[in-house]
Length: 250
Image (cartoon, rainbow, N blue to C red; front, side, top):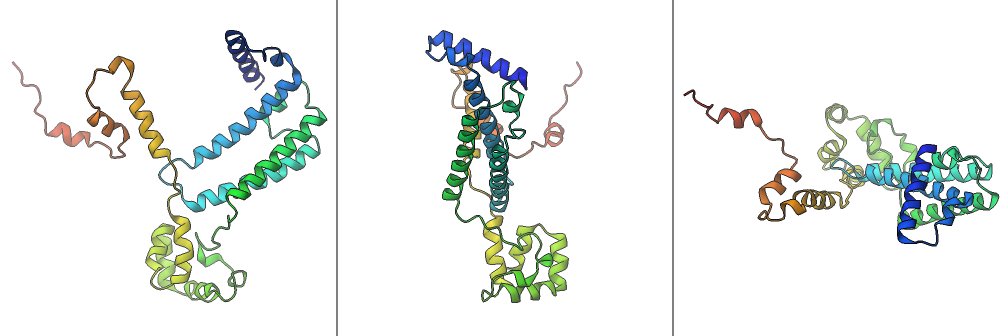
């Protein structure tokens, strides 16, 4: 990790020299390097969370679970900062000089602000208790008067439901149970839907940038190339080859 700090420092030095920046001297300042290391650590964490939600199989329940876990981590990290423990931040820990008391307080405040912003944008992060396995839920822990307690008892005694649960994915299970256990399915299904994100759009733009390079700018509209680049359908190579006649001998 120390090597990463050294490489990042050199890259920034080159950049600042090229741009004649007034911040060149800051890169020799230990306090500045500590701040830079912390920012690199926290942005790496946020980028990893963002990558987790990119893909075709990420559901709303996955988002809620991951976000709840991250908020709990923020609570632990704030306590660690109070005790002057920085092991959760790899780059910051790799520096020879420990962060000053002032910087530790600033980092703690930043973590608290980050938690507050997440709770502001996502105020309701309650995950349905029986979303993955309704047969392991204690009915007494569910809200009274909603019908959930009674339905959970019914479904836990339903042998057909037990068999279907073993053979189906959670979303298919609740879709099949929707007509019989309307209340339970109505709470579970929305959290099993695919988490909405812009990753497919971004993937399309990246593919287009790879196709329409400067060296290929005279190509016509990349319709077929683009379709092949973004499709999730695997080509049936064996079938395509079987339809072609081999080169006849002369």
